Image (cartoon, rainbow, N blue to C red; front, side, top):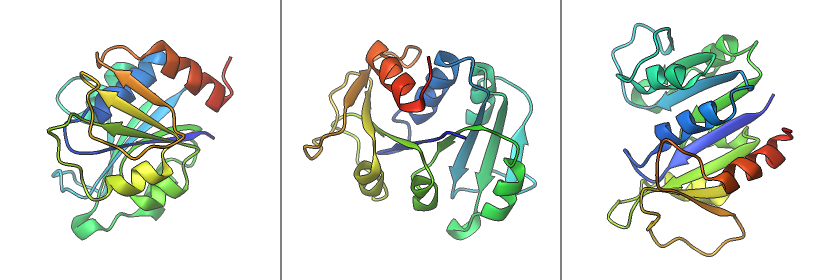
Amino acid sequence: MPAVVVGGSARHVGKTSLICSLIAGFPRCPWTAIKITRHEHGKPAPVWEETEPGQGTDTARYLAAGARRALLVTGLDGTISTAQLQIAIAEDRWLIFETNQIPFLDKADLVLAVAGSLETQSKPSFAEVLRRADAIVYTGSGLGPSLPDSAQPVFVQPDPRHLPLELIDWMRKRLGLP
């Protein structure tokens, strides 16, 4: 069961767009996309399943991109019901998470760090995402913040609707796909 985590330097840097591109770019994979957030979204349960594809929410965008399932996991005061989430995804085999939270980074087979532009102030949690990242993806113009030199591959995604071919090839190899 591959688990991919996409974490980001800040809000609105393209994490959801990258996930949607990955879902659409690997249509044979029955993705379950999960947004993990500390913010309350007014849903009736801490683990909530989206059922309608669209553009209004991140989870609706996941479904519109081709995800088999889309979940929103919220936590008040930073607490998240991992037990409820484990039950909700027990039968799912292809998981992609949008989060910077360490428990999910620890369980990932692949971590992608999405970095925004030079003007973007990084979240404190992004330092841990970078430390654990298997690759860095710059969104937009590709002029991201200064990052420490590392052995991680770096990809630029100037158009959120299209994955760079190099990233597709790299992901295929990392996930063992033909």
